[in-house]
Image 1 (cartoon, rainbow over the protein chains, first blue to last red):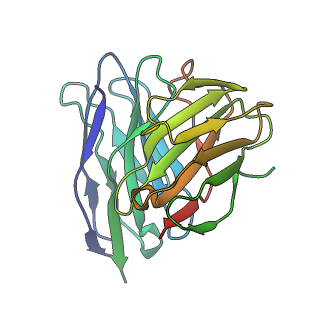
Image 2 (tube, each protein chain N blue to C red):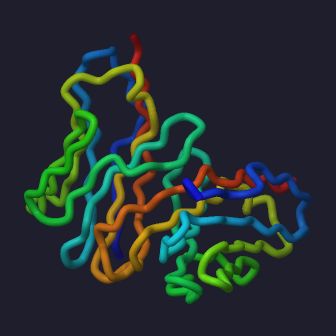
Length: 112
Length: 118
């Protein structure tokens, strides 16, 4: 079945450091891929998405490229801020499925 | 409404009691989803609706769990004879278009109901 694996946290970085959170997936067909973010005390919200191979999703300085050859969708940001501290979830939706399948989440803490 | 609203925000109950969790999706959103999220884990799919029709309930852990959305808007997730292992954050989400037809559709999540079974 479809599944998502993302790197375990927590990840602690200093402000302006480079961020990578790895995500790989297993799916039949051509899933859509997503990164959701959960800020402290809030619900999940969509950060970015990509719907086909080689697509790059981007938002708020974050980027992720849909790599079919490596079944990956790694999240990157060149210079993190304290306000980026949150839990990040990689997710996929495949074929005719209605539901999203989430990874376990990676907690990011950015220190000033 | 402006966002997905869930109530209650917190629910503490004794083992063996029934609980009903409510979700009010964004007005006009066709699809409504229920997820359960244990501490330190990602959301785990439970069930979803397109309009009033339950499309997929494969994620419901057992027959103590049920959900309904009788008028295609507000939904209730009911857990009967609660057990301690049911303790988790229960999250509702909605999307504008039908789940299953648009794989790139964005989900809007509520803040969740934190259920604690003592």
